[in-house]
Image 1 (tube, rainbow, N blue to C red):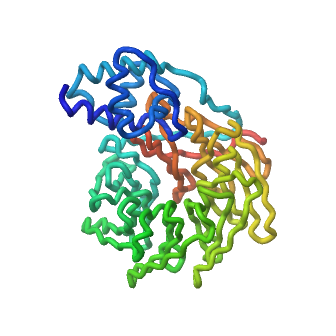
Image 2: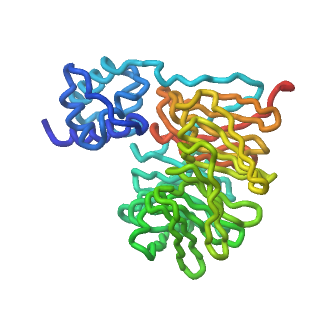
Image 3: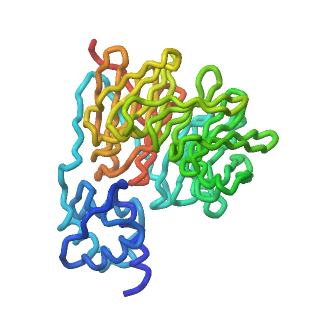
Length: 414
C-alpha cells in the first residue's frame, strides 16, 4: 500500500468528531486495521466511536468536506465501508429541540481548502466576511453578494484561532501555534507579525479591539491575558494568579474593561485596562468551566457554563449570578454565545446535530434548531458574532462551512 492513502485517511479520521475521553478500541471487522493504524496515529479512537454515525454515503459526504480520497479508491471504499457498517446512525447524542415562534434561515458557504476547520467568521464594514482556517494555516474572505472567496496563506505554524478587524479594515489573527499576533492588510496582502515578548506566551487565542484601538487577547494554555498597541507594537502580558484558569473568550464592557472566560476554572475575570490588574469573579458551581461570554446593552454579562450544560448571567454591579439549564441537559456543552437585540444565542456543541439555541431573558423561554451542515450534521460552532443588520455569523468547523443565520422575530405573542 502506498503512503499517500495512509496520510489522507489519517487526516480524515482525525477530524471525525468532537474531543472527549479515551474510549475502547474499534470493533473487529474488515478494514479495522487500516482505520486503526492511521487514525490513532493522531487521535484516540473515540473521535470515531463517539460520533453520531452515518450511512456510507454520508460518511463519504463528510470526508469530501475534509480531504480528497479519490486518488486511492480501494482504500477509500474500505475505510468508508468499515465506518458505515460499524458506526451507522445512532441517537446517543440527539438534542432536545424546543419549538417556538421565532424563525431562522441558514445560508452556507463551503470554503475552498479542505480540512481547514474554518471558524470565527466576522463581518467587515464593506459587508465581506472573514474567517480563520486554523488547520489550513490561512485566513479567508467571502463576498456574500457573489459567493466569491479568497484565502491568504499565513506564516508557518501560525494556525490562527480567530480573526478580528480594526477600524482601518486590517484583519488581525492570533498565531495560536507560534506565539504571535498578525495583521493582514487586505489591500496589499502584506502580513505584519508581532511576536510575544515572553516565550511562555505560546498560544494567543481569542482577540478583540477596545474603543481606543488596543487589541486585547487571551492565551489559553499559557494562562495569560495580553494587550497589543498597534501604533507602537508593544505587547504587555499578565499571568493569571489561578493555575489552570485557561483564559478563553473575551469581550469589552461599556466602560472599556475587558472581561474574559475561564475554560479551566469556575470564573469570569475583569481586567483593569490601565494597570491590567485582574478581578476574579467565582461562579457558583465549582466544576464550572466557561468557553464564551458576551455583554448585553444593560451591562449584564452572559456566559455559557460549558461543563455543566447551563446558561448563566452575572450582574457585575451587584454580583448576583443566575443560571438556567440548557434544553439538552448537562451533557449539551454550550460553546459559542452572542447577544443580538437583547436575545441570547448560543449552541449546544455536545449534541448531534449541533443546535442553535435562542433564549429570551424577558420571558425566560428557550427555542432551538438543528444546524444544517450539508447532509451530515457534524460541525461545531466555536464562536458566533452578530452582523451589522442584526443577524448572526456562525460556522461548522467539522464540515468546512461558514454560515449566515438570518434571524426573524416571533410570529405570535409568546
